[in-house]
Every structure is written in C-alpha cells, then in structure tokens.
Amino acid sequence: MKIKLKLFVCLFTSMSMIGFGQIKSQPATNSTTIYGIYVPQDDPVAKQLVLLALENADAKAAELEVEQANEQLKLAKTDWWNNVAISGNINEYSVNPPKNLTNIYYPRYNFGGVIPLGIFTTHAHKVRAARKAMEIAQMMKLSKMEEIKTEVLSRYQDYLMYKQQLNIQSTITENLYNTYLQTEQKFRSGQVSIDEYNKALQSYNEELSKKITIQHDLNVSKLQIEQLIGVPLENVLNAVNK
Image (tube, rainbow, N blue to C red; front, side):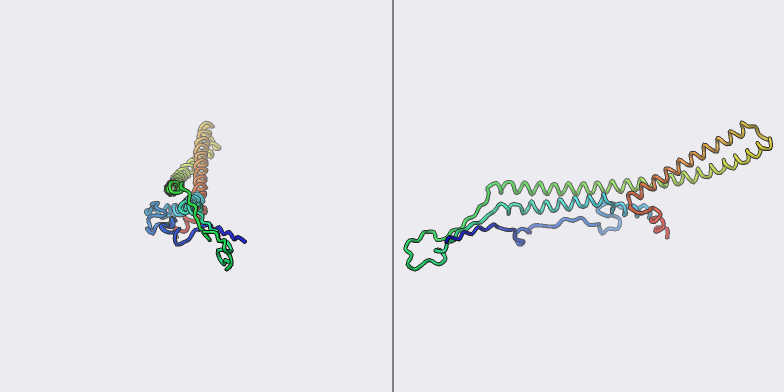
C-alpha cells in the first residue's frame, strides 16, 4: 500500500517574528502631552476637558484604526508562508522492502517544495503598502486628536464667553426691571405718561429677551462640551475647584 504524505509549511514563531515590533500608541509620559497632543497647563479646567475628550469614542476609534493597521502589517509580513508548500512520497516498500523483492523502483522516496516565483516581488509590495497604511492610520489618529482638542477648547471658550455675557446681561436686565417697576408706580400715580410707561416696559422686555438668548447659548455650549467629554461639566468644575 502506498502512503502519500503532503505537508504544508506553517508559520514558525522563531522565523516569522524576526523584525516584528508591535506598534501600539500609548499616552506620552510627559505630563504636558497625551498621545503626542499638547495639553494646556495654564487652565486646570481646560486641561481636564482635553484629557477627558481625548478618551471619547471618536478618539478610541482612531486608536483602533491604528491597531487594525498594525495587525494588517503583521499579516502582510507573514502572508508569503501561505504560498509555500512541501510535499513528499513514501511507500511501504521504501520503508520496509521485502527481502525477496527484486523489482525496486528508484528513487525509493522523494520530497519536493513549491514556491511561487511571484512571491519575491509581491511580498515586498504588500509589506510596503501595509506599512504605509499604518503610517496613514497614525497620522489620521493624530489629526483626529488635534481636532478633538481644538473643538473641546473652542466649546469651552464659548461657554466662558456666554457665562460672562449672561452675568453682564443679568445686571442690565435687573436694572431695567427696577426702572420698569418705578415707572409703573409713577404711571399709577399719574406722574408719567402712558408712552413713558410703555417705553420702560419695552426696554425691559428687550433686555430680558437678550438674557434668555444668552442663557440658551450657554446651555447649548455646555451640552456640546459634555458630548465631547462624556461627563457632566459640573463634575469637572467641582473636581478642579476643590
């Protein structure tokens, strides 16, 4: 009975891992940077907002893109092993031939290998393409991190602006409200005309409307910040101000 063995080469760790270096981005040890992105130090609230924003879903997705590109690079480096095969033929007469056997076929056993010629050209191109894809993923990640940092800091500046505007507008609105109440009392006692009363009421309503608009803008900017950082803004403010 003829026994036929066909062996396909598998990837050996001692050979395939030569030159491999696992690429995984980690936060920089420098306290002023994370993932290579500068973190502002002069404002503790802004610093905390950036740190939180750089851990949100978009930032994590960019990190996963880099990890995926790294895995593709590993596959490209070892893909050529899948195209290499070794085969052999051994029969029972080759292993233990009978003593009285006179008709012996030579060679009694044989081995062979198959290596596609194209592997010497395509493999290098595949590795270079995978390495470039890895570099692109890293650059896209850095760009996304910078974009997230800029957005959260811009939203925070909007929040601070609206907060100051609200304080100013609240004072103006309160003063006009007091003026309106005084004018109303004078109108009831006949000291001012209806036109003066209406003018005072209109001025108060206009400033009240401005206050409501600014309050709306402040609330929206707060929601936008919380969307980026994933926690209530009050938590950050309270933690920093402790």
